[in-house]
Length: 128
Image 1 (cartoon, rainbow, N blue to C red):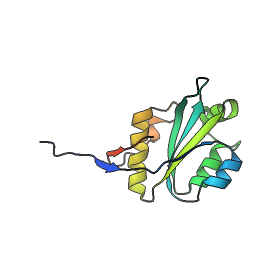
Image 2 (image 1 turned 180 degrees about the vertical axis):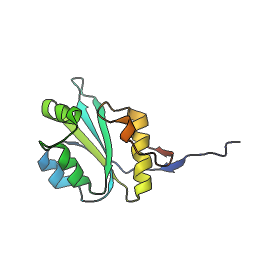
Image 3 (image 1 turned 135 degrees about the horizontal axis):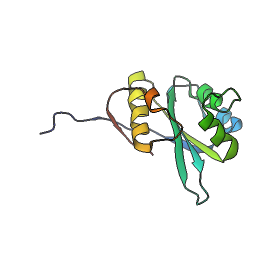
Image 4 (image 1 turned 45 degrees about the vertical axis):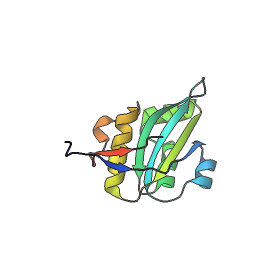
């Protein structure tokens, strides 16, 4: 008998949208949630290169597009490739922590620092 079952959370994903300021203005709310950034590959598939969370998704996603973005990996991808984003609203901080951790473990995105991923609860989510 398994006494340690993961809590399941269903994420209502929005996207994939083109990652630009105009799209952020039109589709992203100033609400809390998790997100993932992906690069469009030549074969039409998407590869997730960064996952994150914020209390204000619009502001955080906008920050990644600015010259002051401190993550050189994100800056390089956004500057060189066609990128897309997807987000899901999630109001509780502990659930965002757990969802970000689950997304990181699922995708192993190259632009995330593994030491900066929150410990959060062990969640089972729908990554797509």
